[in-house]
Image 1 (cartoon, rainbow, N blue to C red):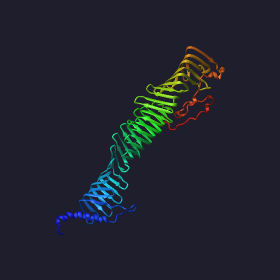
Image 2: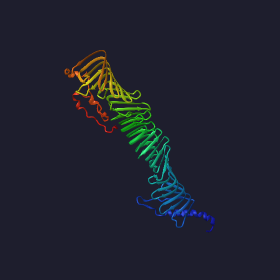
Image 3: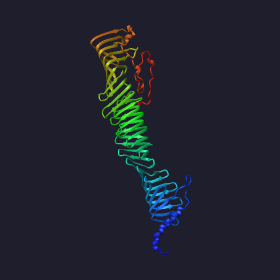
Image 4: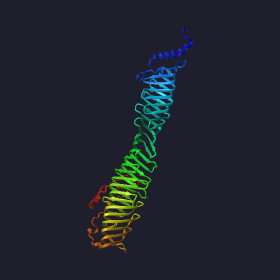
Length: 539
């Protein structure tokens, strides 16, 4: 080679080989795709050195290697180019750049120009403008613009860090799907899930399998729904459960709209709210709850249960509210109120219970029953002792009836105000103030024979009872009284003005609290409404 030194030729040879290889490769017939026809070949753009080893089908390149294929540049320290299969392997300092939106880094890359599938391994980092994905095994399908890992990975954005065993990410939609041992870590909470979908742009997490959300304020069990990691709003489906941090309060419902930041939950469909510390339950078809104030509300077949004593109290109303704290509990019921406990039943239009003063306030045509006694008035206030009725204060108008359980005979007592005292759930003392009128059957002590009906009128009246029998009657101020023998009694003589026996409205058990309180006349009381039975009450 005249005029060319041996040293110059040695420097010129690698570039010549690279040029000849690229030229030869470019003249190959382009590979065919069964579905799309001809595909573009992978272009060798640059390398410091290129060589061909005998017996090895690939061209070997090293030093600042650059490939190009359909909008993407791929860089590495060294590579093997397989021209027949339109593929290459890249080693060390691997980098893929697709426009100015997607950057992928790793230690190894196998790229298939026919399918546009890049397989990267070891120390991989995939970046776009909203998130970074870290893994050791990533397959990136450029045709679908979808990257997925299958041996553990982590996706990080400015709000959250997500890890899982398997995952995929779409830079186009910003949607990431995670499966198997999923964990989303936020500075305020952590989500553990079986399957989770996450959008790096909206920061919305879709819960697609059994999951648990844990924070300092409490934790949530759910299997389906979504969680907005920016606003802490969530929609939880399929009977999800929200617990306080100590586990003493739980909110359950078919669908729950819940904000972890405010602690406010709204429930649609079969709400269940329980305060295990106060031993109280609130249920309804719709509910509302505030964690910070411990206030709950229920409507639609709503009822509350107080199980703090051995005998539970069941309360129903069109609308119920319950507020609790570490010491006291307050329950309010409105419209069509009915309650049941084995030793006490009642109904009214409005009820208010406060554990602070152990009082139960009833307004709106209230009626209470205990044993075979009925008390009604314009307003009834009940003093409870360990949830057992101790006193009933009947205001403005009072009427007490005792069923003697024989021959349709009733002892009756009416007046302006009345105080009824109970011992172990049994009535033992009544005191009437103002316009007292009594009507009771006089009993002969020797053989307990009824000898007549005694009617007394006085300004004040006091009665003691035992075993549902009058043992003492005392009147104050001016008193009038008359005893009418049984044979001389007329039907109108056996009833005081305003008498009504409402036993047909009396709740007979926990499932009977949903029946209507509508009163009917004595003439057709047998034709009243059929009681509604709710089957899911826990007895």
